[in-house]
Amino acid sequence: MKQTRILMDMPIIVEIIDDTVSEDIFTKAYNYFDYIDKKFSTFKENSEITQINKGKISKGNYSEDIQLIFSLAQKTKKETNGYFDIYHNGQFDPSGIVKGWAILNAAKIIQKAGYRNFYVDAGSDIQIFGKNSQGRNWQVGVKNPFNQNEIVKVLSLSDKGIATSGNYMRGQHIYNPKNDKEIIDIVSLTVVGPDIYEADRLATACFAMGKEGIAFLENKKGLEGYLIDKNGLATYTSGFNQYVANIN
Amino acid sequence: MKKYLLSGLVIFGFLIYSFSRQDNNGAAATLSPAPASSVNNQASLVPMGGTMKTNMMQYKNGTYTGNLVDAYYGNVQVQITINSGKVSNVAFLDYPHDRETSIMINTQAMPYLKQEAILAQNANVDIVSGATQTSLAFIQSLQSALNQAK
Image (cartoon, rainbow over all chains, first blue to last red; front, side, top):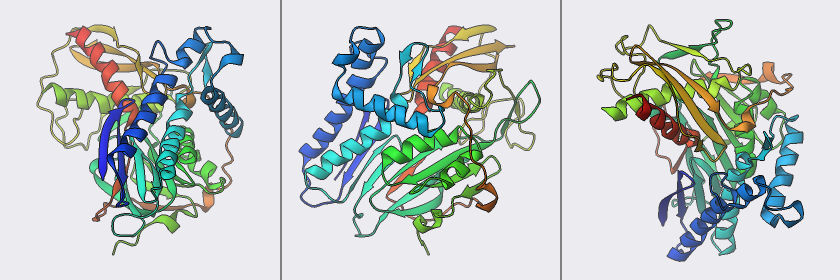
């Protein structure tokens, strides 16, 4: 059974293969995303994060989820040498870390209900568990950044998270007017990790590092990456090939 | 027709958005069409999946600021400049903060990594991973700026 809903400004797809599946688990999962949106959206007047930013909630009264996200953000900040920071201009914006975390939590809700073979895909960042309908690992395509209708890699995944960061370009060049240097460097970075929380936060962080992002990933245990540059040349980490599906 | 224009603008602006992250001085980037492009050189914006037939001369000159939109990864707000009826620049007044600052990176691993040219695959897949999330907020902010330029 497969369902799609638009929440948090993106399509969220849940597919569960187990034959015991019923409608209410989808409702539970989508309700969780709705809860996350209401708590963490900096654009909702009544969200806890907005209330914190307005000084209306004191530190001692933060909810458990807010405290947890703040500590995860702090951890990520350290890991990326201060690169990842949720505090700017006197305001907290933890959204950079909330998405992957929320996908993983929604997947855990589905797991707790007894399901083993499913995925949760929020805006193309995916948590995968178990096997697909043919009893094989889930076959995951990496989108061609130059042609949205194509895939350039097929990965075979089970119990993993996969996230892609990037932007899609074609036929255009962007230059820095100060030094006339082309500033387009990389167009897409896909990260496979032990779960979507790890994959997503590292995909976001490493994409912004440009070509060095793939080197950063190479040095991270349990994380593999596939980086595509503006010329359609891909650079990948040494362990990436273990996930590439044999499609012939 | 508007949709094509918008999708072209989205590609254009989103590129500048993404790569202005690496230009920490916040300098506005400029754009030039690729000479080898099959698209009419008159149009500086290329719509996804088709040739642009839109008459680009439909906006009033000036600078317009779009709405601040929540991209969930952070906020996105664009400012467009219209010259000779065309969008001549898209500047980002706000963007997800987690991409802002620079970082020290261990690049020692770089020489050992393998490379390959990407190749379209013919295969059935269950799911597709790609980048989409911030573009929706970009479209919304851009649309509100363009509405003011009419």
